[in-house]
Image 1: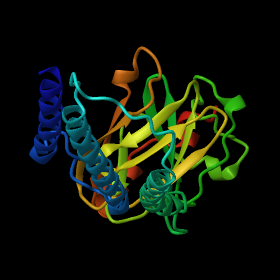
Image 2: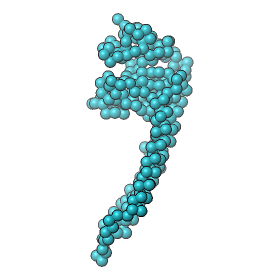
Image 3: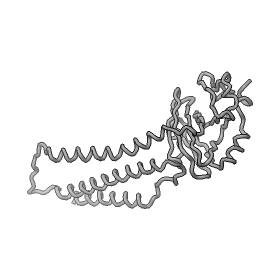
Image 4: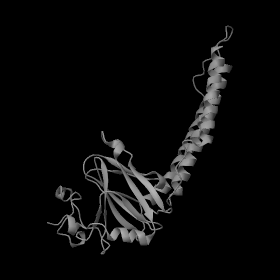
Length: 266
C-alpha cells in the first residue's frame, strides 16, 4: 500500500510540474534585445532537464511499485553491469554537450562587442546604479578607484582631457533603440550583478575589476535594471529605470545631463 501511494505521489508531482510549466505563470519576460540566443539556450536547457525529470520520476514510480516488498520475494545482488554503465555514461556525456555547447557559443558573442557600440560605464554601490556616458569626443575618460571621493564618485581622472566632457547620470539609464551598447561595469564596494531581465543581460560588478557585455535594445519602452547578487540589507532597493527611446530623444536627453567638467572639476 505504501509503495503504491509513493508511486502515485511521484506521478502527481510530474503532472503538476508539467501543468505549471505549460501555464506560463513563471515564464520569461518578453524579449527586448538581440539576445534570442540566450532564450534558445535556456529553452534547450529546460527541455533536456524537463525530459530527464519526467523520465526519471516515472521510472522511479514504476520501480517502487514493481519491486515493492513481498513476503515471498528475494533480492538478487548484481555487483556491476558494464553495459548499463557505458550507456549511462554515454547519455550523460551527450546531455552535457547539448547543455553546454549553445551557452558557450552565445557567451563567446556576449563578451565580444562590435566596434561601433556605444560605450557606457555602469557603477554599482550599496545600493544604487550610476552611469557615465562619453561626451562629444566619443571617448570615456580614465578612471581610478583611488580618485573616488564624494565630489568624484566615479573616480574620474581629471588630468585626462577625454574625461572632462563625459556625461553623468545618477538616476536612469537611457539607451538609443537599435544601436549596439557595451557596458563597462564597476563596483565601489561589494560584488553586485547588473541585470536587465528583458534584455537577458547580466554581468557581475566586481571591486577592482572592469567587466563588460553588450546588447542591442530592440524595443522602445521602460524597463528595469536590478542587482542579481545579494549585496547587503538594501539589496532589494538596488533598482534603476532603463529607458529605450528613439535616437533623437536619446540625444536630447543626453544634452541636458551634467558633465564631469561642470560637476566634478574644482
